[in-house]
Length: 244
Image (tube, rainbow, N blue to C red; front, top):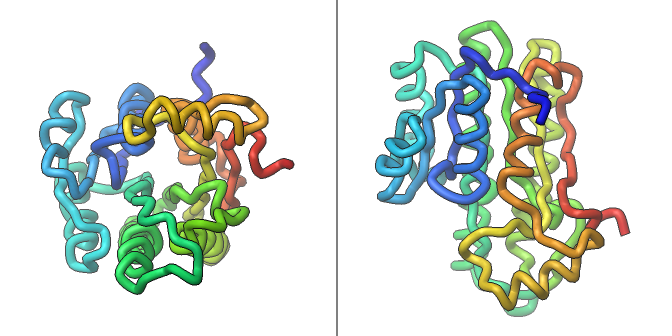
């Protein structure tokens, strides 16, 4: 397969990098020549990092001081940061609006929305200090572009990520700081059992689930120099789900 991105010499942070799309993205970046720090709440983050050849940082992305420390640690390790992927997230409870609880709402919004904001905030600050631009990709969802009626917190958080991306991606465009989002459909991960995989596959016109590696390749393109004129946008990778 032809390589479409070259990340040689780039220094990257990937939150949620110990599993799923985050892990696949970290591996793709390393294969394309980047040095990577995976940052995750999981206690397994150091073991995963050792296996894939990355640096590790344990972080709670809902904590301002921990996200700031994460970026500082990456700069200490690498000398600078050129790329960040904000992929830490959770699904929360499947609740419609008339059953939503403050506890579930707060948990999902804190991780899926505030965590992205904090990551973007401190990475953009570092990019501006360096004065050389940089690229961020935020993990939204196809449910940031259309609703999932029985999970209002997740819909709201991912919709927020899409508009946060538009705001940040246009605010700093003249400084060559690019911020984009990807909006995956249902992706094949160990969290989805075989029965639900069949059900979810039927929801997509492609009649299958996405693979984490497919999303990772899109992210790698968006952070590469080949995507210099792309910022402030949210790109679907959902097997056609949001097209119908």
